[in-house]
Image (cartoon, rainbow, N blue to C red; front, side, top):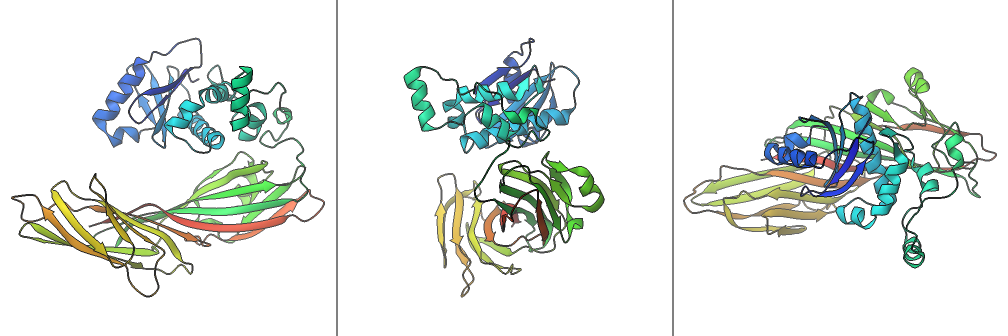
Amino acid sequence: MLQCIFLLSDSGEIMLEKQLTGHRVDRSICAWFWEQSVSQGDSFKLQPVIASPTHYLFQVVREGITFLACTQVEMPPLMGIEFLCRVADVLTDYLGELNEDLVKDNFVIVYELLDEMIDNGFPLTTEPNILREIIAPPNLVSKVLSVVTGNSSNVSDTIPGAIASHVPWRTTDPKYAKNEVNVDLVEEMDAILNRDGHLVKCEIYGEIQVNSHLSGLPDLTLSFTNPSILDDVRFHPCVRFRPWESHQILSFVPPDGQFKLMSYRVRKLKNTPVYVKPQFTSDAGTCRVSVLVGIRHDPGKPIDSIDVQFQLPSCILSADLTSNYGTVNILSNKMCSWTIGKMPKDKTPSMSGTLTLETGLQQLHIFPTFQVRFKIMGVVLSALQVDKLDVKNLPNHPYKGFRALTRAGKFEVRS
């Protein structure tokens, strides 16, 4: 049972407080939490469950906002963590994105959502489809009406029919003139390469995102040609677990609209689509820099939105960097950003220049880590392949679309 939820900004300010039970949690717990976070750094922020002198704390961080829940009773820790993730997902769905200003501008809707999502400390209604029938998402018309009428409530007077349904995640009996379902495979590559260009770690985090506009109560089956490569699978509540356990087939009645059907990991990949080769040579107070970027393993589709960033060490007084392709910018915080865009076919992008070291320092002893971003449309690097998508309980054949996207996640190159 959760007793209180706090939303903290990236500066430690309490943006929102929601007491969930008759036992009031004092705000001083947030001061203790933030003191520990500042003193212990990133290692503290990575802990989802924290034992304070008076409470157990659950934390989830999204877009610089810390979702903090408190309890003094024994409870399954995954329930607290999953609920905070659901709150963050629902707020992102309602507000379009998640940041401090949006939360402050929509305090009323955030409180109303929390009222519906949790009752006396126990999760209640967390499905976005049902919540949208109960609480209208914010828009310009509703804001104008609330100012004119003085009524700031967005809560509907009628109970959603899906609450009494055996598929509570789906809107009651939707009807469409054109039935269609679109499946997107979206993957992020996390990789670490050492200074010699060898892979230290390379894995894929992927999501199967579905946008369903189907009438009635359809029954879908999605199968893969190579499901054995998938690890750490996580499903939407609509997925029936037994068909996956026995035949690794996704059988489900979809929610209406867009939703995340499944997430997964693919480990121990052997190749990355791009390489980054940095070289630093320092002598007599200056350091020469050379960075090459190229295609290591051709994915068969254009590699786009390539961007290379690295933090200049504090001992660097000035930097003069140029490139033969793209643009190089050095920000005031000594962050260097090299924007390449689409990988050219006729040349290998390179960046070079000199760094001036501080007085008394002859050689550079602290070398930066390069952060790489890229995007590849139309391909997934895990090699996961969709076999077929069957749709039942519809009078005619719907349109079925498939897309794929791979982008860089935490892609680091050590120098």
